[in-house]
Image (tube, rainbow, N blue to C red; front, side, top):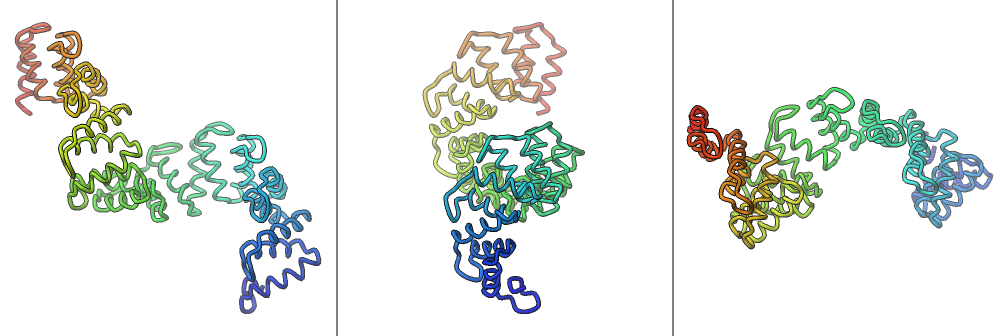
Length: 421
């Protein structure tokens, strides 16, 4: 009553004294509670060594909370040596008494192989025991195991249900993951409005990834009204927490003047932050700014380097742009063989400009053998994407019968398409 202020003023010092009187008489609950006060420094000095001793006295009497608390001290090396084997044993004793937190922590130890063998099936079972008692952490961890199929069959519907249980308890990570499942239609119907709501719940708790994803939904008008000002604000919250995609997206908004003033200097800075974290889109966009001298000095060598980083990750636009730099000898040596290879990588990803540029190289025999039939095919691909120059060249080829059958009707059709550009 003194500890909680029931029936009179709260007095933790008096509570500590009274617990001490009961503890020396062997009362396990008093020993456990007194251990907690020593561990937390409540009602007197903090003393983790004494806390560990007191938890031990209560634990040997079968007090589940003391066993759990003592397990924590052994796991963390608090009040004495770290001993994960002993921690696992103590958590096991408490778990056998039905202690939900002990069951959850013991599951983590089994899942990660700490203090004994790794056993994902046992981890899944233990998370289940704690989850049915309402432990949000266990519900979240069990949901993850169901989602990815660890310790048992993959079950996205069950994962979605479990994330929901943890989410209503305010668990931000559960809210975020449940939002992902609603956004992508995993484990149940796709519901972008619900995803947006859940991202919002996690975002206000400071979850950076939720802030980034919610920003994207506002920017695109998904799950609710489009609001670029709010998107820019949310990207900013996530960006300062070092979420690379948020930095990239915020850079784009600054570069384009979306949701606020245009600021190419800030865009370049933000792209730089995301680029060093390996975001290919940021590397490509930053390269473009260096190539054109936007937001800072023009530096074609740096542009070429950055395009290379993004191209190596499969970014089609970077492959196309890097191909052009190799073809023209900008930012480094001229290398038409490399240009042709890079255009090819981008062309198979349906980048019309790469298809057109590669067609030119095949038509002229640059960077490899001349192949006018392949050039005509590539012009056709680019033309189908609405590339005006490709449509014009293709019209000429059809009209003249160059590198393929003469087809004046097709020439007129392609030519008309070109004129509509």
